[in-house]
Length: 231
Image 1 (cartoon, rainbow, N blue to C red):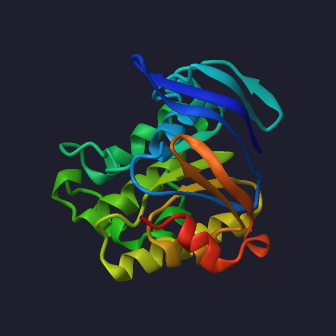
Image 2 (image 1 turned 30 degrees about the vertical axis):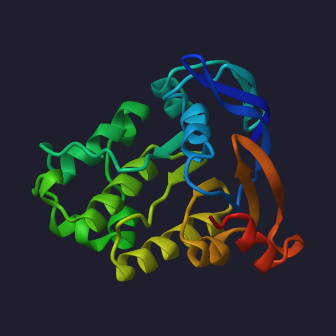
């Protein structure tokens, strides 16, 4: 579903990503791991178009993607749940969900029951402002909003950060459900090792803006992987 070759990214004169190559398949979770500051979030921003890459090639479902802006990539099937969630605090839960309609034809402007089955709390809080939700509830809203765009590729940037354990478990179940549907590739950036290891089908380990290790879970020893992503 996703193929990246030799991707580079700069912030001004500073090069952050140095020739990243990786793939993510539909029906799988690809986990990008590494210590803080190695470029994981920058990689997701480059894929999602929220920060343009400097060089390299990106393909989505066989289509070569130029350096397109985020809203065009969203329409092409890139769903992005950024670190910090970035929901609209003054809009209600219903209105936050409806912002996803910009990626959909008018006939599909509806919130399917599947969303409320996965995230029951959102149905209860449809009229509540996004800024009044807890961190865990905001994270559920951000994932639901991305799901509404019907993505081929779902990018999740540290979805467990600052979230209470029961909601972490729920988010894990949702990721498993989406993976098992088989039609979506999921790229997960995650610091919580046990959560990531339990979900991932393959790993990409980054160090100093480069890929230092990659492979399927069955190919990488757990302790070796854990040591590679530890401070």
